[in-house]
Image (tube, rainbow, N blue to C red):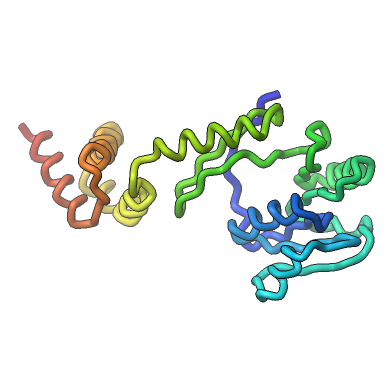
Length: 213
């Protein structure tokens, strides 16, 4: 089954990871990278996760104990990574009853969302999913796509974001703006340039002059 792709803000959202092994560790890193508050509950917590806590990582709390049903209450999302399928399915069922997003590791049919392979460069995020059929296949494709992303592309996008209102003010036609953005990005790509605000202003002037002719 193909999953509908959407981007979601998890900054400062309360998330739960049940499990303390290597897989749980990787999921924790992913959540923290996007600013989530993460609570970990597990009977045994691996050294890598403990180290994150010892590093005083903001928004991370560890509880070395058995899972309890109340642990999922009020969570934005939950990851069941105990390695015990029956328990992961049980946690998933509890979450679904409360309308909580849940990922049960390696139990695709118990997931309401899955983790895609991700390319992240600043605010540029590209995700690849195989519908749970082949995580390795998604990871392989991620490497291929990452090589195809132009150098400094994420920096160019940041400049465009900073100057978005200026562009909208000076180029008021939506179709023209789309053409302008495409031309600027293509120019940077073809010439291996990293865009600056000054360069962008020059491109606006040139674009408008061409439109006047």
